[in-house]
Length: 393
Ligand code: GLA
Image 1 (cartoon, helix red, strand yellow):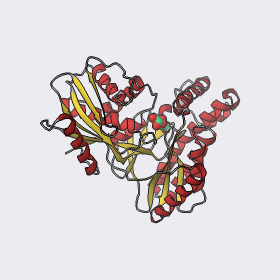
Image 2 (cartoon, helix red, strand yellow):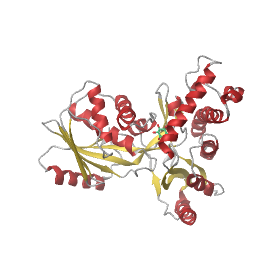
Image 3 (tube, protein in one colour):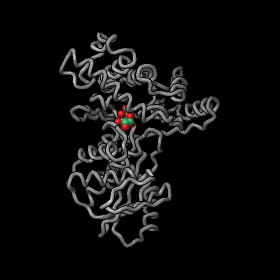
Image 4 (cartoon, protein in one colour):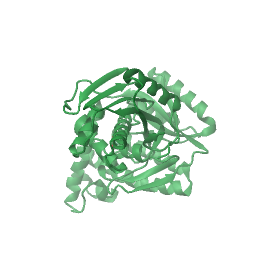
């Protein structure tokens, strides 16, 4: 795949670090896999619904070469740390960053595929913990690289599914399929509508001439994030159990409608009702938002983003005061046509559609307000939509 936007300085610096670590007598290859944004469709992936993500110009890079023995030697350039393991011993180490790489090797072995050892330096500029899925980028990057180097014959879809499994089974996070999909299948200047039930993919050009995508990073990650994520999954399953009694065809909330949820409001109970209401409406919202994109009505698309935020805040309850504050700041700003929290929630970034000519002023205002409220210097990232996972040649 042709790479449109490798960060060449970053690649050069990771290459240098590879050579310092492993010497320069190896034939290396370099791979890139990007972080992702999600325009609309939050928490819908594990409910078999639709999502609308895109891969961006912040990415993970691996500089890698095979070894003749069965050792894996890793150098984390951003942390200046090393970790080595043998392909015969995938015991989980106390240090957490190698879990992703070991999880990928485990998936390869579970498929009955064979590789020899390898050595790699990796790093990148996807902010960690900001909700851009640096972990999915890392998994997809390594698996894509190993597929190329060892000729494993995997397709892009295998890479996505195995990377998600590595995260579910080895890392121990019950994420859906959106992040890995977005990283591996991204296309420059397009958002992708993924049907998480059939895995059908449709690309829509995302116009970037008048508006810019700006992420505002709360710089907080509340500890609730992973436990509440799993609780939401269970609450949705509970909703499905109840609704199924009235229509056996309902296997997931994708198969239910907001009307059906409303009809069984009392039986669902307040909490499960609000979870199901949000998800069934959000699935429909993705479809409506795509129609607006096709019509070229970006302001109406942006209004849908605000609706999503309201639902995530009040009904799905995965937002937090810092995210709500940042979204609230934009509500009366005529230069911002859409804003909402992005990703799993309880911290990370808001995603904002901001009139291009006013981005400097927007960032300045947001920084001042956030500093005043939380005494935190607000990082803002202007992102461009780029191609997905690939080799840099
Ligand atoms: C996290 C998960 C995704 C998805 C989002 C919420 O990013 O990894 O699978 O569920 O949260 O939309």
